[in-house]
Image (tube, protein in one colour):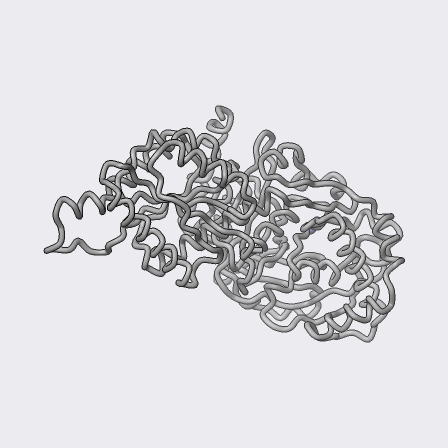
Length: 490
Ligand code: MN
């Protein structure tokens, strides 16, 4: 999917310096584009599109960018000075993600060569400020990245922003299939689906569990054989109860058929509505997540959609992104950890080792013992993300964490588990999280960064709260208070 998108490199200039300068600008812009594409640090293709000299050129280009479904955003830069009033009409119409890349063709100031001609050609230092002003004046939701275009760190930042922009494009057409409603009485999994569709684009709709059961009944033994081969090639079969695992395969095949028929990339279900089903989907949901589908348990469509969006943003990366739930704490002063898990459905993309297929009874849901994947999450820096509906606006809460190898083997815990240190520490992190209203369900990702989530939130015009190693409850509470005021005025 990343390969389906491109970004347009748009360079600002004007007629003042004559045709030769404009030719040089265009030639260099193409050279920089080729260099960036060859760097291997951009996940999507960059296309040098135009050197802008007039209002009409900007306006026409923005119309084309809005219309072109391949274009996931524009990246602007001013090689020379480009008077910004000519950008206003175009920017008013801009519907695609926008990054202002403040760079310069030459890295160093050349001692002998520098004269006024050189200065007129290479004046991004003030060209980019004029350009930046109009972005600020128009309150455009933009990303500003400054640095030398040949530096790997700068290229990676552009690449990371591209991934966030692709998340925006993916989000705007995302469809979520709900099998049944939310778990009864739960508040945080509720939300305004109309507001969400306006802001984030998600089409969240329900399909009957009865239809899923019908589709399951129509699955053939051959189809199940085929998926069982996939299961046993990817996971260790640690049960003799093959029929139970085959039943999960039947569930997965049926859910996938229904999802694909409606072009849905995320789904929810709930243990309270399994009418006609023998097992809560375990490995069925886990393997679908590993294939890129978003999932939310207990009808949590916000978590399902965010899982899908973050999987789309991190396509091709190998750290893993999973639906997660804070389950229980280890509060020893010397070893403060959160234990994350779910009653079945943690995505095996975060597994440290080859997952095991096991069958154990499930205390809730009143169904047969389901097959599930059991594994430990791998160590590494990661984030957990929660989207909550504050009434009138969505709030995205992101916390930095560091996953560790679980400090205990927990041999009687029959589910996948991830253990982590929260930032700034366990209890302060919990105070910040609870103050912000973060849910028990999250999306945990080793691949997507907090900066990318912030970029995503900004492009989507939703609130963003980041809990970091430096956070204090006081600062978070103040931010929440000010955000509440700001969002009332919006
Ligand atoms: Mn749950």
